[in-house]
Amino acid sequence: MTLLAHAIAAAPPALVAPDGLRGRPLAWSEAGDLGLWATEWAPDLKLERPDALEHHRLVERICAAQPCLPVRFGTAFATSADARASLDKRAAALHEALGRVAGKSELALTLLWRGAAVPPATPSAAGPGRQYMEARRAEFAAREARRARAESMVETILAELATERQFVWHETCTSENVAVSLAVLVPTQLVHERKADLERVAAGFADVTAVLNGPWPPYTFARID
Amino acid sequence: MKELTAEDTSLLELVDRLLNKGVVLAGEATISVAGIDLIYLGLNVVLAAVETIEKTQERRAS
Image 1 (cartoon, each protein chain N blue to C red):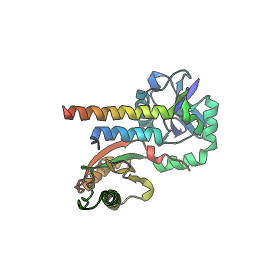
Image 2 (image 1 turned 45 degrees about the vertical axis):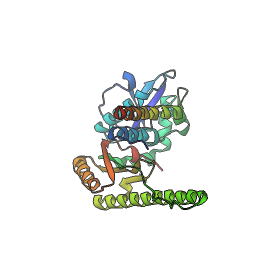
Image 3 (image 1 turned 180 degrees about the vertical axis):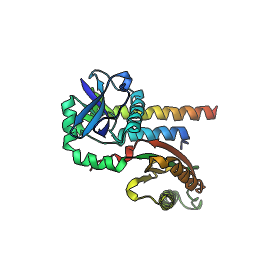
Image 4 (image 1 turned 135 degrees about the vertical axis):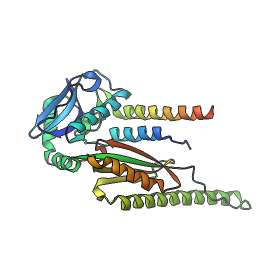
């Protein structure tokens, strides 16, 4: 029997509905004062698209019951002993990460550019070689201007949130559409206030559309070093 | 450039977290589960999101 991992929590386990992925049993594998929530999976069962979203709902359910660290979707162990050994090996780092996310939830803010970047026109009197090079230079300048603008929006958000940097993660210009992808870890009881803060700050940026998601389990902040 | 809707963006952000974030407990175990390559699975999930985007574009165009 394979164990398909969902989340790590401190022992003892909270009372969680016993249904795992696709209604299969949800198991708790305990190692010292930590434990792993996992679905009892069959090695011949293939993971499908809906399983990823069901994993998310399971992690949400577990995190609502007790502080937990989401495990990357698709992590599996051949036996419960393997799972326990893996927890044992990383116990100190897992405890530290659990302490970081306890009582907190993740909010995700994505800023999407309104329209495509428009590089300045090149002089039509120039020869084809010159026109090509000028066009390349203009595209590069437009891209760099967007990157600088995205970074300045991030700085504004960070200043407004007044949150410790360790509780904020961001990337800029990850695709043509995306200006900023930002995650912030906030106290769960303040989620609504922090969402309102993010909405208010993002509304001040005229060149992007804001998409706000969460509260989610602390996926982005569950890393262990 | 394809325009992302709020719904597309939310799905892509979530899928990115499920596949790329969270605790990595066993490097080798995250590569495949029951013989399914997760890179393929990831592509599959992202493809699902892209299909949604394309359908939205088609609806707008019609």
